Image 1 (cartoon, rainbow, N blue to C red):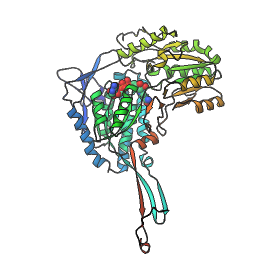
Image 2 (image 1 turned 90 degrees about the vertical axis):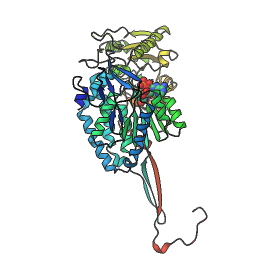
Image 3 (image 1 turned 30 degrees about the horizontal axis):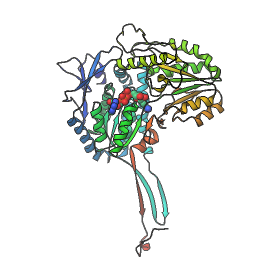
Image 4 (image 1 turned 60 degrees about the vertical axis):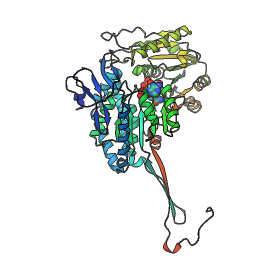
Length: 519
Ligand code: NAD
């Protein structure tokens, strides 16, 4: 079935259906267990970023359709929340296997709509799959606490209970991983889920929904709507929705956090970043250069954990020419081409924005050590390509330092000491991730203790925690107080019920009313 969804020659049955009047496939809504065509008159085109050809269309769901999706979630919650935890676990055990079996098909869809290389797209699925695998441990993760005999004949225990209908709003850059940070954990806890994928890359979520249905998830437990602002506002305002998970830009994330919170919902909002890599002169040079290049330019820099800013401390600045040479060796090409290292940016607007940020650096006094503008990708002249770019002599007042570039651009600063580097990073508003490259344990320890960033790598360029931990971006990169996945994810999607119970022996009956607080 999945193969037929992706094989252009075969009639497409579910996530995307060919209209007879148009050769462009349309993305369906997933409402109450059915993949249905939207009645909307408003559609958005989905482009292949390597060619800018239209490869699909996605509807802006109507108010009626969004209400139907939310109602379906509300109805399904009644029985899903009562379904045994072992049954829910079984569904997710089947789900993880189905994702594993179809990883290549999912990756193809990601490369088609998002542009990243096929190998990187498989990584995107794999990191989401790990979250699904972890959710299969729900029988341990959802355990409550007990304390017997808090006083005579009295015991206290807690249950972790689902909270109701939850919703997820996802960005374009990880079409598999980020939706998989959301609905599997929410659902395995007993909640039902309303998902709004990024309107630029909806295909992968549709395939994932079909696989979840095939794994046995009952109708209505997952619903999918598409759209932009109206869909986001719907989620922020609908009274049945109790919690919102958002990942994306600060502009959207802060808005959703505020609007959702005002409406009494839990909101967790993972947002933008400016991640610094500190290079100490005692670091292993070969490892460090390779890791910097991979983490700055992989996925064309469109990762919230991309290492987009390097700080060379002391004489490590002498490694810059080698960094430039190594970066030149990366092959810029369409993501489905063999040997491609750096794929296209998501849209022509993103390309223009990244190029203008490079130009702003030049005009504000940075040194253009490697210029990836005007890169020529044979056969893909219409694609949104920017090659690896390095700006040296960057200072903290420059626009290219202050803004998240979200492209294959590494900005390089220099510092005379570790203290100077730490102070520079702590003065940056973002706190998503950072890395230090050093062979000195004391340096690494000082750094991890003093740097005010939520996720730190020591000789690890992109320290995204595995799902038994949580994704702990901080400061300007996060709003809310409970993080994604891991223990924090379970906490986000559950509420605690505390039971205090007294069972007295028959001969210990309460003989008079207690009107004072027990002491
Ligand atoms: P985006 O904010 O443009 O879109 C994310 C979602 O919000 C989409 O579903 C979109 O429809 C919706 N949206 C967009 N603009 C909106 C607005 N003004 N009001 C309400 N809703 C809106 O983000 P993107 O471009 O898809 O993703 C890139 C951003 O996401 C980068 O800033 C990146 O750092 C961030 N990101 C963060 C993390 C993290 O975990 N911290 C992970 C991945 C991406």
